[in-house]
Structure formats: C-alpha cells, structure tokens
View 1 (tube, rainbow, N blue to C red):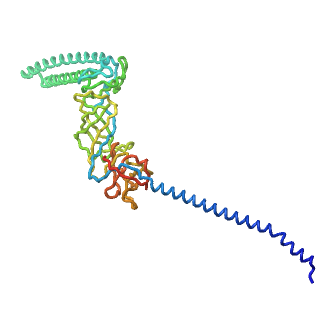
View 2: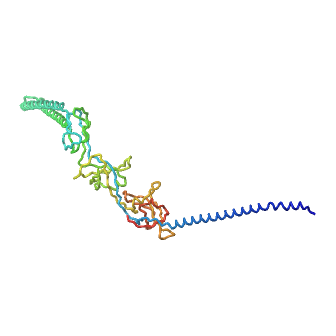
View 3: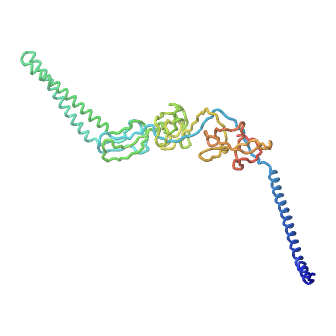
Length: 396
C-alpha cells in the first residue's frame, strides 16, 4: 500500500515546473518567426533594389559619338621642316703675307666693300728705300754695260786689223754679257720690291661685307695675322642637316623653299655632303638662297627648310586628335564595332597602329584595322573600351 504523502509530493513537484518551460518555448518560437520574416523581407528589399538598378542600367541610352569612315589610301605627301644655320657663300680672313707695322685700316665692321678695294696698309718706308737702292744699283749696271759695249767695239776693230789678240776681244764680249745679266738681276729685285709694295696693301678679293675687324692701325702684325674677315653676302647659303634617306633623294640644282625670319626664299641645292655627322647623325646639305627683290638675311640666323616628299605606301589618313599614345611609343585609335546583342547600337574597341607621318594636324597610320572601320576622331577621353555608343558620321 502506497504512502499518500509520498505520492502527493511526487505529483505536486512536476506541476510546479511546467509553466516556465511552456513560456520559454513560446518565446523561442516567436523570436525565430520574427527573425525569419525579417530576413525574408530584407532579402526581398535587396533583390528589388538590385533589380531596379539593373532595370535602370539597361534602360540607360547609349552615348552618341561622331565617327569617321576610313578608307586606305596608296601614297601620300610627307610635309615637314628641318633646321640649320645661315652662312656666307665665302668667308675669308684677310692677312698680310709679311709682317710689319699696320699703317692704316680703311674699313669698319659691317661695311660693304667692292672687289679690289683697299682694306688696310702696312708701313712701306723700308720697302721704298730698298727700291730706291735697287734702282741706283741698276743704273750703275746700265753704265757698266755701256762701257763694256764700247770696249767690245774697240776690241773688235783692233782684232779685225790684227792689232789685238783674240783673248782681249773675248773678254770684252763676255763682259757685255755679264753686265746684261746683272741688269736682269736688278730688274728682278725691283720686281720683288714692287710685289712687296703691292702686298703691303690688303685688298678685297671679291665684293663682300666686312665681318670682324680685329686689329687697329699702329699695331705690329706678323705674317698671317688676320686683319679683317670678309663675308660674301651676294648669295647666302643655308647649311641644313637632313636624315640620310631624305638627303639621298635630293639632286643638285633642285629647287626648294627655305624660310629665314618668317620670310620664304627660293633655294637651290648647291652641295650634298657624303659623310654623316657623328653628333647629329644627319647629312649636311647646302642650299643657295635667291635674295633678288628680298632683304638679305643676316648670317647666323636659323634657316628652316620646308620640304614635300611623295611616299608610295598604303596608309589611313586620320586626325591627330584621334591618336592615343601608349607605352613604349605605341599608338592606338578608338573604333566602333557592331554590338552582337543589339544591332541598333555599337561598342567601342581599341586598335594599335603604326604612325608613319604627321604634320601636326593630320596623321598617316598603318594597322590591322577591320573592314570599313569607323574611327572616333575626337573626344576619345569621354568613352571607354566596351561602352555602348550610337554613331553619327562626321567628315575629316
């Protein structure tokens, strides 16, 4: 038989613990439901936002760009310029052949002189005294010659009458010959003095302009000391260094245009050197400028050769604004290509090209471009590769 008190207490203990366990389960289930509902609502909001963004992006209209249809050309004209210096056709440093005292300088720097005009003079008093002495010596020799001739005539008459020996006649004849030789020697000495007197006057060998005048009157100069520099200004020469390939295409006498101080001058190829400068790796070409009716330019100014050269090579003609420089000197252009998903729009693509020539405005390039390419000539910074665009055809 069971104990009532024991059964009652065992039965009452579980009934006391049941209410807290039920409330705890209720709270856990409620929290889980709220969390699940929140996650579902948040997911739907996020998916909706992405969907709205996608719809907005897909609905964005393509960018309108100007495009230029390109067609390959065969042969183009290369224009450009090369620079050099203007120099005189002839440059001479005038100097005396003998030393002496500089008596007079008759020109100044910048003067125009004619051919044969006296530039400077040496003191010639010593030469004049020497000439006087030579003239006196010659006069004495002439007197000796006359005496020898008279002696020869007497000896001849005596010999013919057998009153004199043949040796005396021979001596008289040889004395006449010797006197004549001494007179010729005196004449040569006088000629030498006259030449020295003539060279004591420094004369211009051609019409020119005086450049440097470095020594003044009263100075003692040695033989070969430059007194003045003459510059032939009748036909200025432009010395311009050209690339070897361009110089090889030139011909002597061909006509070109050389610009000096914004003035264009007709120019003729005067000479082409056949050695390459070690410093500039160019070939010097001399151009004679025709200054008829134009102002004679000053020597030492910069001369600019304007040239045109025909290049027999296939290329594309594009504006310089369409070129983009990349790494290692590579150039590229932006083209438009059809969009595979939408035939009404195009996409931007990049193609690398080789730059053949440019004149600052137009460039000639080569590259593996698609058939009938459409070039974006301007505003390449406003688009990126792969961007959807709408084309508007422009003209170069």
